[in-house]
Amino acid sequence: LAAVPAMAAVRVLAMLGAARAQHATADAIARRHLDEAAASVAEDAVARHEIRVRYKRWLWWTRFGMAVGALQLVGAIYLMFVIVSDLPNERRPTSCFFGQDGAERVSRRALIASFLILSWVVVILQCFTGSDVLRWRSFYATHDMAWKAHYREVFDHGIREAMCCLGRAKYLAVLEEDEVYSVARLLGELVAYRASGTGHLELLAGLALLQKHGNLPDLQTDLVEAPHKLMREAAVLHPFAEACYTGPLLDVGRNPILFPCAWVYRQGVLTPWARLRRPALDGDNWWRGHAAAFLRFVNIAPTALVRGRVRQSKREAAYFVVVLHDKKTVLIGVRGTETPEDLITDGLCRECAFTMEDLDGLVKYVRLNSHLFCSYLIHF
Image 1 (spheres, rainbow, N blue to C red):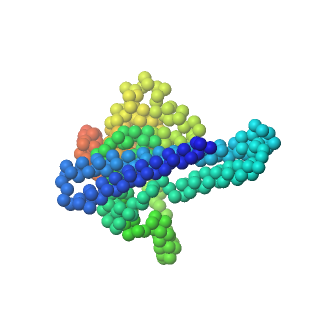
Image 2 (tube, rainbow, N blue to C red):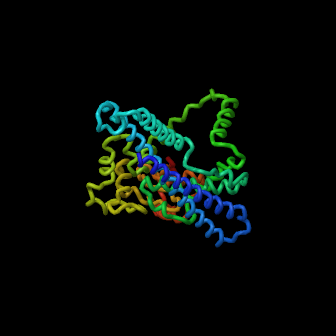
Image 3 (tube, one colour):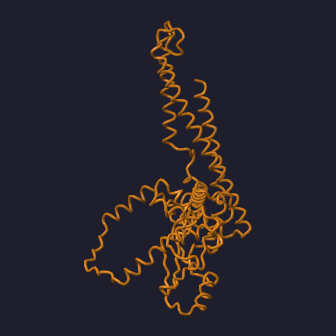
C-alpha cells in the first residue's frame, strides 16, 4: 500500500523534471533558429551542441518517467493479486484485508477497493496523456524553422538509437554533422506542416482523400514483349547482381533457420587456407570473406574479380568489378540496400557518380586487355 503512492510521487517528480528539460530544450532551439541568420559558424556549432545535450537530457527524463509508469502498473497488478487472494480468507483472523471482524470491516473494504480503483485509474490516465507535461506548440507557435529543428533532433536521435540497436553503436556518440544528421534534416523538412497546427493523422487523412478522389491512371494495354536477347542477357547477369549481397541477407530467404551456418560457409570461414587465393577487396575482413561469398555464389575463378569495395564510410556504395573472358565482358555490380548504412544512403536520395579513383583499376585493366569490348553496369 505504501509503495503505490510512493511510486506516484516519483512519477510526479519525473514529470516535473521532464517538463523543465523540455522547456530548456525548446528555449535553446528557439534562441538558435529564430536568430539563425545573425549567428556565426562558431556560435552555430556551440548552439547545436547545446541542443543535442538538452535533447538527451529531456529524453532521459521522459524514459525515466516511462519506467516509473511501468513500475506503477506492476504495483497495481500485484496489489490486485494480493486483495483477490485474500477474498477466500474472509473468516480468518490472519487475513490481510478482509479477515477483520467488527463494525469497520465494511469501511475497510470500501477503502481498499477505492484505493485499488484509484491506482488503476491513475495508471491508465498516464498511459493516455503521455509523458510530456507541456506541448511544443506553446513554444514554437507557427515558426517553421523552429518546428524543422525540433523534428530534426527527434529524427536524429531516433535514427541513431535504431542504428545502435542494429549493431552500429558508433553513431550514438557523434555530435557533429554526419550522414545521419543529413537524413534527419531532410525528414525535418518533410514535417514542417506542424507549424500550421496540422496533426500527423490529419495529414494522412488528407492524403488518403486525395488518393481516393484522384483519377486513376489509364492502364496500358499495348504491352510489348521483351526481346529474347535482352532476357537472355538478364538471365546471365542476374546472378552477379544477386551475389553483390555478401552479407547474411542473401541467405535469410533461402535458409530461414540455418542462415547463420550458410553465411559462415559462404564467407569461407571454414577455409582460411584459401585466403591468399582470393582477391583483396577494399574493406574486406581478414579472411577475405566478402570476396569468397561473391565468388562462391556466381562460381567463377578468383582472377575474374579484379576490384571491389565493401567498406562503407561517408555514404560510399559497395561494388564489384568482374572480367568475364569467355563472354568478353567487363561487369560492374553495384550493391543496393543491405546494411544500415545503405538505408541512410537511400534516405538522402542523392546521386553520386563513380570517381576516377573508383574506376582507376578498371581503366588500367581495360587498357591492358583491349580485346574486351563490352561492359555492363548492374545496380540491384
